[in-house]
Every structure is written in structure tokens, then in C-alpha cells.
Length: 377
Image (cartoon, rainbow, N blue to C red; front, top):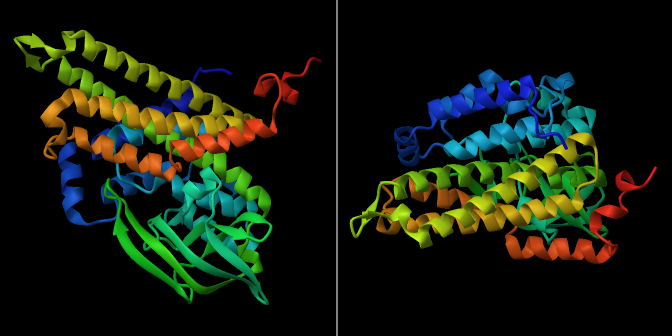
């Protein structure tokens, strides 16, 4: 695995960092909180102008056709700045349609690549943790959907939503028109300000062409994990950086609290969590772009992201003391983002269960040594 960035990757990372820093200052985030808008409009417009919204979308449909490593750098920058924009779901949904959808959806993919239409994903926690979601029963024209899918981001603003379904023979992905008959959207807002809707399905009928092939789910799961983990890496890195700056100045008993051994050990543990997440995420993105299997790596990254987000977040809040719960001070934003990201990953316990199940089904001496890539020539 090569950690060296190419010149193109370096340029993308630097552009993303500058763009998010310019548009996501604390004053802008405060105005966004009070605005009720779904995203920070100047930031999303800048993402579209620079093409950051379509890095993964194939170039044949108007995107850049790049890989998860490039997207990882962009999402890490977004997480560091806490910039509210529908960046990763939009392009993963568009790339899913371009790769696995019917040719009839091609104009919508092209509109998404141009930034004219927004696409989104729902039920990612169910996809990652492999747990029940909307049920689907056979219908003469396709499938009838029933149940509720909770907290789908940007469902009200999207032209199309990709959701997981529980079919009689297992989980599959399908796309929905948010204006479908029998579909009700119950609006809400997540802790970090992201707009969501519960999708309540009562006799929603989708056509056969709206059901994506089984391979689409296998394609989406590790990429969704990588995207969420990249955001978490950025969130936690900035959170830790702000915390270290704070403890270097905050004084108790006429001493900087950063000189206290207990505080230093807490920050050292947080750094270990952060670097563990970074290295496992890099491995996952490398394997995705190299076309290698990555089921276990994706589950590991999901768990590390949940755990690192929780532990770093609470250590940061602890050493900030009362300042940490003052919402006029920005450190609380990072904890909100971490909680939402961990929830969308399915939660540490559910992800660990999925990883344990994978290990039970691949019971060999060291999970990686049974793979063809490690076989002796």
C-alpha cells in the first residue's frame, strides 16, 4: 500500500481544504444554524463549480471518474471544517445509478454530475450493519413497499432516493421518486443541522427497473463506510487540534492544564485512536480503488470510526469542562457531528456483530491470509 499522494491528489486535497476553510468559518456556521436552510448555499455552489460534487461519477456521464482516495481527502477536509453540504451521498447515489441502473436513468445522472439535480441515499445504517429495512413484496408491476425508513438525509430536496429493501431472498437496493404515490415524508433535523425525513411507505409501488442488482449493495457498503469514516477522521482531527490548543492555554492552580499528566495521557490515547482510524481507512480506500476484496476491512473501519468518534469526542468535552457545553463555543459542533456519523454507520455494537459474523464464516489462520492476493506464487 503506497501512502504517497500523486500531484493530482495533492492538488485536490489542497483545493478542498482551502474551499471548506473559506466557506465554513464559525460565523458562517452560526448563520447557517439560524437560517433553516438545508445546506450552506455558497459552499455547495463552490463544490459544484470546482467539481468536488462529482469526483466519483464516471466521466462518460459528466463526472471526473476518480476514486475513493480522492474523495477521502475531500471528505476529510469537509469534516475538519464541519461544512454542511450533501457531498458524498450525492455522488455515490449518482455513481450507483450510472454503474448499475437502467439506461433510462442516464439523463438524471448527467444532471447530477452537472449539479442541476440532487440525489441522495437512505438507510445507510441498515446497509452497513446489515439489519432489516423497508419490506418489499412482489407486485404485478414490480414491488410493493411497506414500513418506515427513518432519517433519510436531504429526502425533501432530492430528485431521487436510493434505499435498501428487504426482499424475500435478502437485501437489495432500489431507487424511489420522492413524489411516489403512497410515500409520505415526515421532516426533521439531525443534531448537526442536516435535514432529514422519515420515509413512510404505504403501498408504494416501484417498477422492476427501479430494483438494482445484488452487486450494487456490495459496491455501496464499503464506499459508504469509507465516506463516513473520512468525515469522522476530519471531524476528530480538528476536534483534537482545537482541544490541544485549548489545554495549552487554560490554567488551573496557576498551571496550564496541558501540563497535567492525566490530561496528557488522555490526549495521547485520543491521538492513538485517530491514527488507527487513519491507517485502516487508508487501507480500505486503497483496496477499493485497486479492486481488491474489502468486506472485513470495511467492517473494521466502521467500528474504528464509531469508537474513535465517541472516545475522542468525550475526551475533548471532558478536558474543556464547562466551556465544552457552551453552545456559543464551537467545540460542541464536533461532538454533534461524531454522534450523527456513528449513528449512520450503524453504531459500534452492531458493526462489531457484523464483523464477528464475517470472521465466523471465514475461520482461517489470520483472516487476510486466505485471500488470493496473499497466495504464494
